[in-house]
Image (spheres, rainbow, N blue to C red):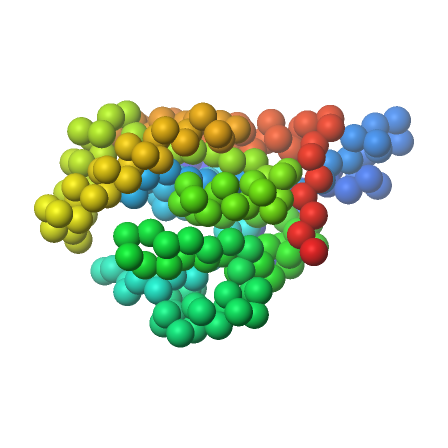
Length: 226
């Protein structure tokens, strides 16, 4: 898969705005979109998103805040914004988060301002949010597009989590229990993509097709973040 041009900044590919369309079709000039990517821990969301940003132009990932400590090879500002519980509580008090939720004894939240800024720049936004937070985004931004990344089986999911070697047996069992609950919510999403073992490029291609299809909607639901 070849990398597209740098999508973090700069002009967005045309057609984007009304002036880029033939005059007969300017009423179809699309709204910018917010894509929410969810799925159980260990399903491969980070790698899917990383490859998606290389494959599709005009996307910006908004980095989540979390109170959990960084894992090996995770980078501040790239994987997460790592903060203390006190700093996280301050973000809540200042109403700076689009959504927030607890997961595995840590807190996660999506900062609202980077979402607002990306949309203002004419970019589509990608958010990685667990299922509870995704439902909150759906409530606040009804036009957001929700994509659930699913494992081919819980047996395969257990293998992936165990291979990370960052969890003990009790933690793995809790994550699998939670994964079962999250899979029950998949029907509330707009799309479900199965990330099969050693076939991640297929999953990325499917998510990329979803992005392009949503960009071509004749009557998109507007995403307005005040």
